[in-house]
Length: 225
Length: 97
Ligand SMILES: [Zn+2]
Image 1 (spheres, protein in one colour):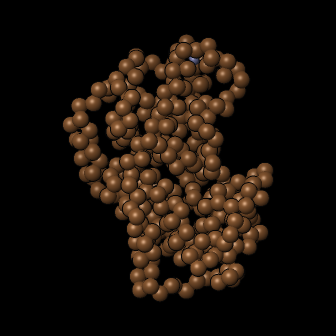
Image 2: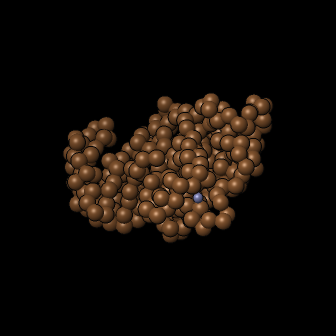
Image 3: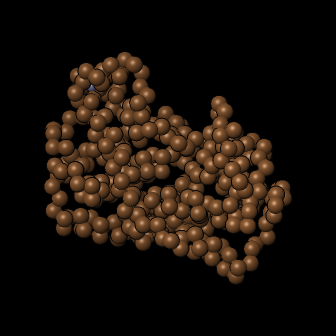
């Protein structure tokens, strides 16, 4: 497991104020400036991904339309993957991801730059998935579990990739929702413990412990299978 | 994955400590004394090995997601149904607009 790429800081807001960024006709940030700016500002406390800067600048400028256009392009696939892990269905993941970016648009003015734009958007996706899970009686996830049983998986074999993925998704499905969120945020979305802590409203040490415990529970699910 | 379920040696408090710090341990940032314990403890070594695999496996499990090619277009259509851009609240004019 490499070092996490994403970092955020409470000084993110200061960073935006120092940036002058333009967008070309395609809505792309102009030139290489953004990629470099994210390096230039990566001093002691702030390291932003280029995508965070590209989304954060219009967000802080109050340009919700531009922020969503850039966010949907740069983060759409990552948000979709997160929703997929949380909901267990391709179709629902697409819908939830769509909903997420609409919520970003309508809630753009509530972004406070306490975390990176990326973690803020993941937090929104997480809430939307939680609402869907409680509202929909987990129909699609039950279907998924039934599907899994029909494969007659060998509990001792995790070598085949497709089979391993099916087993992991089934085991994730059996975990408490909080555990699934923690693991998806950490190991697929590669959120820092700090960003996870912000998203869940807990401190960073607690986030580290909870991720570890979720891993142990996932391991036990697989061993018991 | 078919071994007994014991995750660590209940008699050794360092095993409990490694388990408690598992998420940090698989990132490779543990105090040296715990690193030394892990090297000597087959139970902790196995726990870390499996946890590392699980982290990767979670990412692989998300690979089944297929991102729609028209995803972005649908988002934009939904926030901008008539093709008319909403009023922008600009704190500062965008350069080159
Ligand atoms: Zn041990």
